[in-house]
Image 1 (cartoon, rainbow, N blue to C red):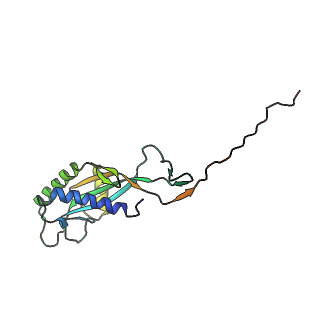
Image 2: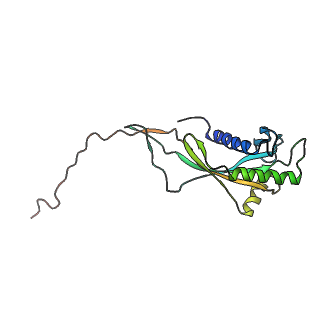
Length: 187
């Protein structure tokens, strides 16, 4: 079980895919796409921002994982990660026109739509476009202190977060059962 940050490695895979799809066809440099938050003053054209995570429980809580005869690991946590792909309207030197923004968001939509699954630790992480209601989009952008703008909403799931909590469960070696017949000794 790797102790490396799962989110960081998944973000690297996501950025790698976006860069492969968008550089040099739409963007000039790989650094034009960055993991950052809207409103940041960094020099990038397309921002990728993790804005929400939810526990994925399709079939109830998962069982403990057997490591050996007497050791169990607490169940992994399965998450859905939601990302926002947006054009950086605050590019410091070379401003972004409305047409540039449209082209960039369309290219991000194409790249996200063609992504398929990402492989992380031998597990497939599915990607899907997500279309929140307008009220959710507005609330999200307002919480980021930014006006609503066109963006791509991307979902990655299941993202497996392994537990490091381990418990020892000794195997049953002997079992004794005694019983008495009900009503024995009554006349």
